[in-house]
Image 1 (tube, rainbow, N blue to C red):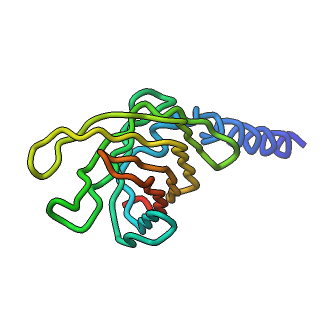
Image 2: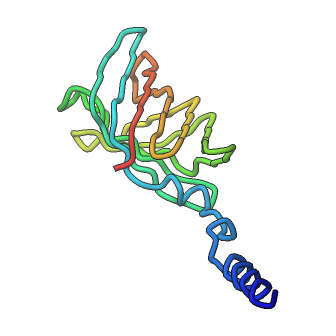
Image 3: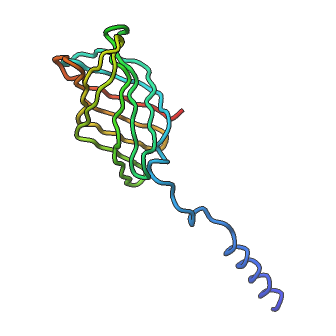
Length: 158
């Protein structure tokens, strides 16, 4: 009887003392998604596909709950290229395994191939991270271009 009680105590003692990942705090959402993602970017201009290329988007932690996104250059090269540009301070929320970010609008300026400052604005920015993948959508107005460019990027973490 004493041997049985001792063996039960040993089993319970080792079970309760084992380390468990359930007790560790979850990393902040920005840490979970920060990094480089490579995938397919499709740009629609005036209801027609303008480009369909492999691109790499960068996401950098700003705080535990927000990130900056860097959109890579897009276009056909030379003067027809829109330089890489940032969208800053995108707030993140988490529901289950999905982390989302939304920004109604963001504006800034970038230098084009000639070194001239050009204004840009993005609207309806949506990010959806799930596991090691991301889907990004936004509309872009660049310089004096008469049409909005609707962009969808689907990528996987490098």
